[in-house]
Amino acid sequence: MQMLWQLFSAFLQIGAFSIGGGYAVIPMIRDQVVIHHGWITQKVFTDIITISQMTPGPLAINTSTFVGLQIAGIPGAMTATLGCVLPGVAAALLLHLFFQRHRRSLYISGVLEGLKAASVGLIMSAGGTILMLTFCGTFDWQSVERVDIPSFILFGAALFALRKWRVNPILLMTLTGAAGYLVYGLR
Image 1 (cartoon, one colour):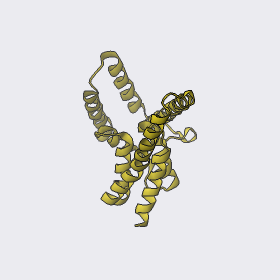
Image 2 (cartoon, rainbow, N blue to C red):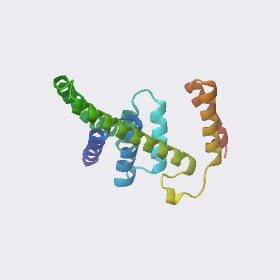
Image 3 (cartoon, one colour):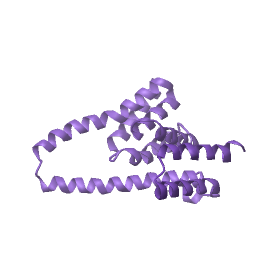
C-alpha cells in the first residue's frame, strides 16, 4: 500500500508539472522513477519508452501505465495512470472556465506564448535524452564510453527514408525492428 501511495504521489507531481505532455514529460518521469526513487534502471526505462511509443494512446499515459505495471503490477499501473491523469483533467476543467471569462485578454495570450516556448524546450530535452540513450547507453555526457554505431546507422537510415521517400512509419518501425533484431538479437 505504501508503494502505491508513493507511485500515486510521484505521478501526481509529474502530471501536475508536465506542461506540454508527450515527449516533454519523459525527463520528469525518468527523474522520478530512475534517479530519485531508483525503482527501475535506465535500461528498463528506455525499454518502457520504446513500448509506450508503439502502443496506441498518449505517450505520457502509456509510460505511466507501463512504469506502474513494472513497479507494482496492475494496481501500480492503475495508480500511476490515475496520478498522471488527474492533474491534467482538473487543470483542463479549471482552465476552460478561466478562458471562457478572459477570452480577449492580451496578458493571457502572452502567458500562452511563454508556455509554448517552454514546451518546445522540454520536448527537445526528451528527444536529446532518447538519442543519448540510443547512441551511448546513457543520458549523461560525462559517462559516455562509446557510441553504438549500428544504432546510429539504423537511425540515420530510418530518418533518411522517412524524409526522402515518406515511408509509412509503421512499415519503417517494422523494418528497423527487424534490422535491430538481426544486429542485436543474434549476438
